[in-house]
Amino acid sequence: MAHSHGHHHDHKDLKGRNLLISICLNILITVAQVIGGIISGSLSLLSDALHNFSDVLSLIVSYVADRFSKKEASFDKTFGYKRAEIIAAFVNASTLIVVAFYLIYEAVIRFINPQEIESGLVIWLAILGIVANGFSVLLLRKDSKANMNMRSAYLHLLTDMSASVAVLIGGLLMQYFGWFWVDSVLTVLIAIYLLFMGYDLLKSSFKVLMLFTPDDMDLSVIREAISEIPEIENVHHMHIWQLNENETHLEAHIDFNRDIKLSEFDTILDRVEDVLYHEFGINHVNIQPEFQKDDPKDIVVQD
Image 1: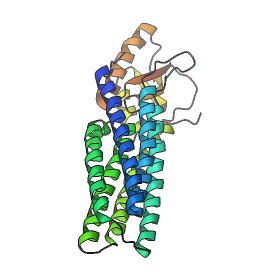
Image 2: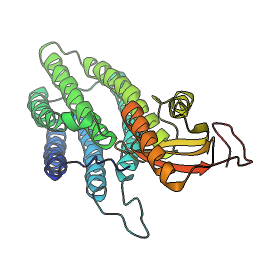
Image 3: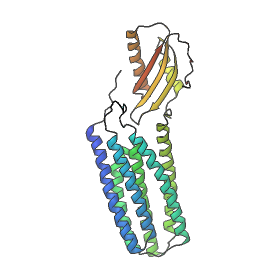
Image 4: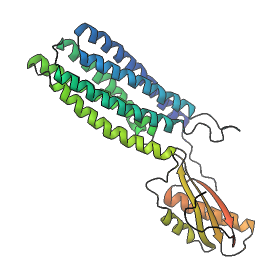
């Protein structure tokens, strides 16, 4: 039974456009922060510029993956590039964790050796970062809820915006109170948050790449639901995996309690697909029919 789950092309194009806008904004921020950091002597601005540059690269990875994911399947690529966005999410989640550790390192160095800087310039550039990254965060927020690739890009930008807020607060406190240590403390807090979010995304994308069973699916429950169909004797040798966030696949062997005709199997298969789709959200099903076949009947069989 075929289930249609296509996405509107305008939405896909909008997603790519939003990424492209975010890339351009981050390039602008990076250049401004490098110039500002050199002029003001601010190590924090230069560190934030490096952070922004890493985000530019991550956004480019996300954009390329988004474009590739739309390519059609072919004889030598039967799934097309549907996993490109999952790979991008995994790469970007890894860089999130690396950036977090780097920010902690920089914060510790700055805390040990605080430096006086031109706080006025730092404040204005931090405001620029907040506005530009805040706009990018709003652009990607909706798509980030349903797409790992967009979520990885969104987290990079959200961290950028948070870092800019930290730089702004640090700049104000340095200008009016001379509290140079505040920037380091805020940076560490942002980095810790980034580690938690990055690890969660890394774990989720790793599970998809490794073809693990989705967390919200229980093979025993699914087997029981299919087995309620009267003609089915046993369901075994099951595999459930996600190709990407839109496609969940199931393959299994089904023992029938009598030697049914092929036409009957097609009718039963329609019912199996209805159960799997409506109750579990599984939208791609591949069933091997069997009758009194001598093979292992366990739910999971090592191939």
